[in-house]
Image (cartoon, rainbow over all chains, first blue to last red; front, side):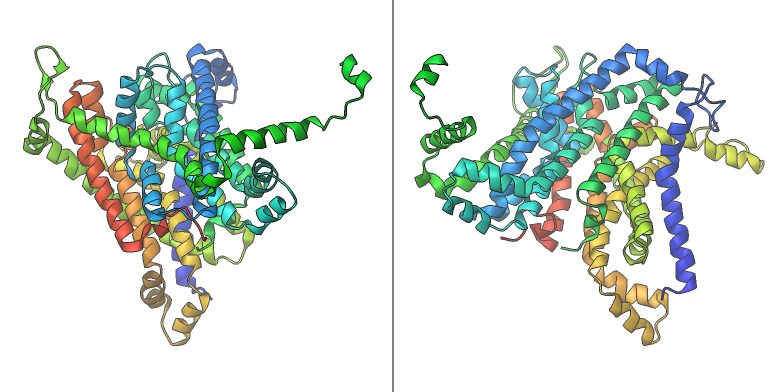
Length: 265
Length: 317
């Protein structure tokens, strides 16, 4: 049904998009297995020596460890908070629901540089700047709408009568929550949690503002190293992120199916 | 333990006792008569968490009212609007603002130009495998993170990078492709493409295929069908995607910093420099607040045009 000219034109644009989206990633991964001492593509022979190198590099290893800690803290804060908020927005009739929505979307509507600077000043006045955990909290703040979204879309399709039935059978409020409501919205909680974790792993700007030399996370460390020197070890570190992204996409597809993002509301 | 065994007291399973204890605790902490407010209790942690941002905005506003005391390099005590005057009078900041707006505008244009056919093909393709492949090609970069993507672009566009190698095959001398304005716009387009496609796709899904068939059976060729049927019907998606891409690229930091090489600063970079290079907190705060205001105006337009529903979180009640 699509006419030939349209097909050719559209598919060439699609291929152009695929190239500009994928080639930088492929080249990073390709450059990381070079045997030479500088970034080159095609790689100068095949070797995994740069992976050995980064496993030994203390700053990179520590930055990676801090990134994991930060992401876990972000998860620990955002999953309970986001789940409860998502449930509140769908299962309860709140007054000023529209105003609440606008308020809870502030993390998306305030530019990241503004949020980052603001939290830097706030954390500074609370004297907690310079530790690792506030970064995790900050990342939970800026990405919280993602998990509220995914939980509330899960909760919207959950039959409210199930909770009443549980109560009718003698379940108390805590029991109903843990045995009926929570399992019902679990797909949304897991999807949201996955998003929060991966976005916290890769977050850059707010982390840059909230960390110092002793608390840098991996993306900030990569940024700092790019500015000083371009060697294949950075490509090897970046490949770690590519692996994380592959895992995340695979999991997301298994959990909810990527096609869900094409649905119209 | 032995005593219990002797007396043979009956005990409920541990899980039941824990549940009962939790129920009892909840009855004390949040008695049932408070249940009309349960929704508020559940949403309160999220409100407090986002409250940190609001607090941050107040702190920014407060700092923006103090000028830097050049003798002590500490913010001065008295309140003044001097920082805002300085921003308004400075030709540099107007240039940075103009560059950011131009960059964001060009990014919106090129991103939508690429995203519209991409989402159209993705939505309309009959093959599930093609659709999946196109989705993976979008999500992978989304999860890889901006720094690593910018790093990839640095390698590809570098003087000894892949693009120059290809050009070299045709006998073209290495060209400096990085650290200029087009490089930043290219990086932003690459960064924004997944966002735009994912915002457009639902809008295109909502267009019934029959409308296009009807248009072509009435004699319209595909260009006219696309121009008079698809684009008008996808307009909400286009405007939404355009505004999101616009605000995100207007306020972006990493692409101008990494691909612009310090010569192509956007507003975010200027703010960062005020805080971390010149240490003039007040001026940086004034700039940050102006940027937040600019961003809020753009978002306000989105909400005014579409209602919060487009970005809303409540779902159906």
